[in-house]
Length: 205
Image 1 (cartoon, rainbow, N blue to C red):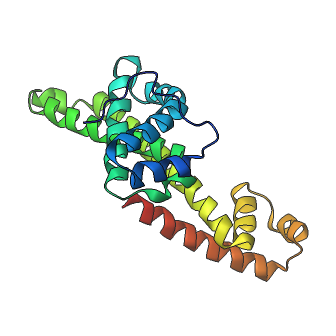
Image 2 (image 1 turned 90 degrees about the horizontal axis):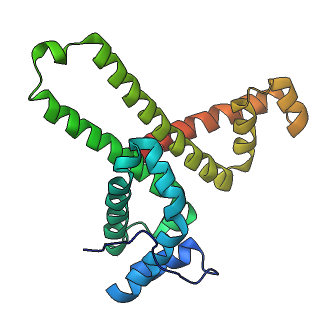
């Protein structure tokens, strides 16, 4: 099993994430580990800080290692070749989902030993529900950002309208900025909103 140390390994700084990911996917294990170590070296400092915000300093390293192992297995299995376009977002999103899964498992394990009074304590249930809600909302926000980038590449006009509407720009201002009729703006926003909703739900599966 692949094990990454805290410092990773130096790689070709001129290579993009997509090139390194291709190196992980398309080479033998030794060369793949070298390409993967370069990804680790580039992203681990920021990723570790992110993990600290999710689970705290004491558990951040374990979470980070678990996520890197997941990414490694995914890439070596031939999946995830498109990660190069948004690798850091994939990394952070995987960390959120892993942290949520761990939280659920820990909660289930604790529930088996807690008294019924503890399990039904309103304050505890409310605090945990709020924590889960924040994590799920953060995960959904990441997916929305990714979907917006895809919308930009595929439907430029819809993307322009969607960004302005998300920023609560008045429709009359949108019409003026984009030189579009009101009916056209409304239709583009309707199509963009429908497409983004489907994209976010698809990414969540």
